[in-house]
Image (cartoon, rainbow, N blue to C red; front, side, top):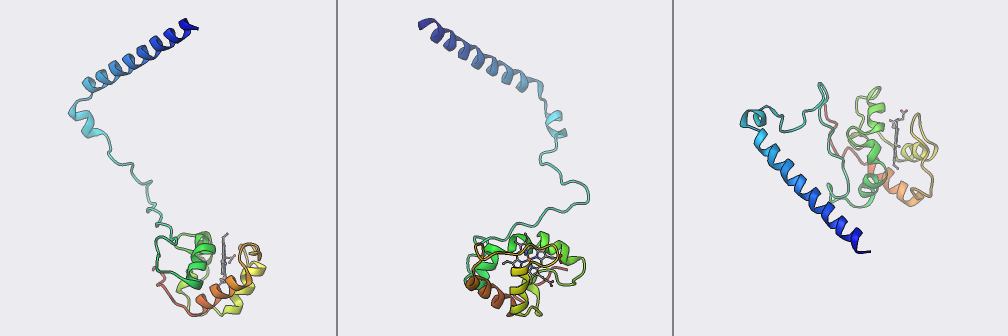
Length: 149
Ligand code: HEC
């Protein structure tokens, strides 16, 4: 059992030595001009602005009640750049549900429970009746944010 251990140790030493040499060589080969020519930060693909940062309970730490529930259960689709926002944006001037002043609570409840258009129905196991009522009341009391132009 000794020999394999020694061989393994030798192998590891050889690998480490090789890596050191490779690093040293790389260091020698790279001159200042080459470094300057490398883009330092990956560039954005042409014509596509960076996606907005997602809204979560930690980016809105003050949220409570229906607002906190909306952030937890709906904003992944209904936040800026969300799937619901994109689809709604095609035929509604105000796509963010939180920016609307015309959302009756009952409409929100029916839309969420039955699904609407491309939005899947949200079952009670995911959002309870009490939670959905709180979300609907919160949205009906809007607008809470501005629709970005
Ligand atoms: C999986 C993504 C997704 C989730 C999660 C989601 N929605 Fe939606 N929602 C959509 C999409 C997509 C639409 C647009 C449907 C269409 O017009 O085809 C939409 C539309 C709606 C509408 C209709 C708005 C209008 O003016 O017609 C309401 C109200 C709504 N959602 C409420 C909610 C609530 C409340 C929640 C959280 C409990 C929620 N949604 C969660 C994707 C989602």
